[in-house]
Length: 226
Image (cartoon, rainbow, N blue to C red):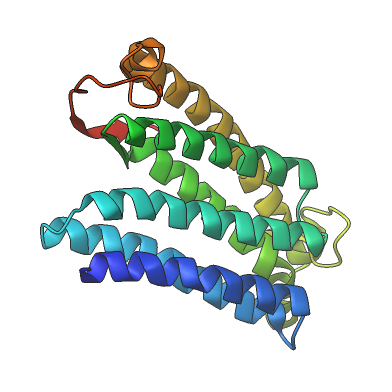
């Protein structure tokens, strides 16, 4: 296993740490949780960069990388819902979308197709990271900014039932954008998946059909426009 894949596995292992820190509400759990989340998110950029730079892109990496992203986002969103910092219905839409895409990726994998993450998926993940960061660390950052600057904007600019709500309110707006991107990218992905895989699913000789015995042509590096 190469270093990029190890970084991806590390990101997966950091998810339970993030959830435990937030759910047990240890001292300064928002700050610790935000740091853990940022470090985990940074590995997403680093593993992809190293894999391309060192030409170590592997099928395992293509499968693990989006899985690690989904686990990280799901763990963070569920924690935010439990902390009453994020709307449950928004978290449900994003997580349900991830389960649906994971299922489609599994079907594609059964047919010998590896679907790599695309540009739209990275934008979606970026908005999710920004939204979760603001929702998690925003109230604390707002309080610090108000104490340091004395600017009332950090208290009253976006008042959404939080004592210091500027960055938390920005997090809600970013989460709206993430939900829209999640729905949009899911529709695009499903249409592309059906265009590439629909005939295989219906084919009697498909690998996912128990009676299938015929060879299946191999398609590699199909970009996922998530």
